[in-house]
Amino acid sequence: MWTEDHRRAADRRGLRYPSDLTDVEWELVRPFIRPAKRGGRPRTVDVREVLNAIFYVLSTGCQWNAIPSDLPPRSTVWDYLDLWEWDGTIARVHDALYVESRERSGRDGSPTTAILDAQSAKGAVKGGARLIRPGTMPVRRSLAASATSSSTRRACC
Image 1 (tube, rainbow, N blue to C red):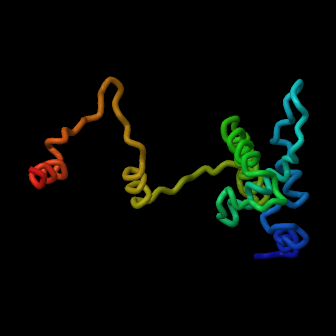
Image 2 (image 1 turned 90 degrees about the horizontal axis):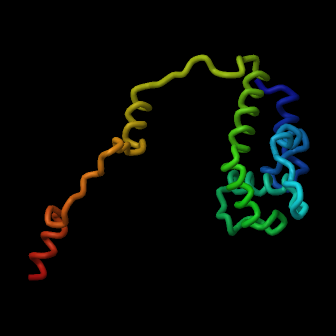
């Protein structure tokens, strides 16, 4: 059931884009963003704006080269996203916010039960990565065994 607190938290009026971080949201995420490295050039980009650009792309589905010009350049945004994926920042933010949202709703921080139905299990097998046993090579098919190759050869000669 929606309360007045929910409505205030979901209100995006006053933001430049609906995907921009509110001050409260930024305060939740900010501790997970590492400071600039010591000894190099000082960081000149506003990391909050980088996050706003990432959320803009995610919420609108726009192409990277269509990021509005009032957000940081796409190369900067992409580099930060790549760095944060590599160093685990995205995973840490996700995990912390996931636990906090569960605790706010009165549940345990980590789920104790998972539900797996037959459709999910079948889909996972079909879409999963192909595993090759160590010490074996994948089977190679010869061109002679290919129907396309043999039909092309007959048509040409």
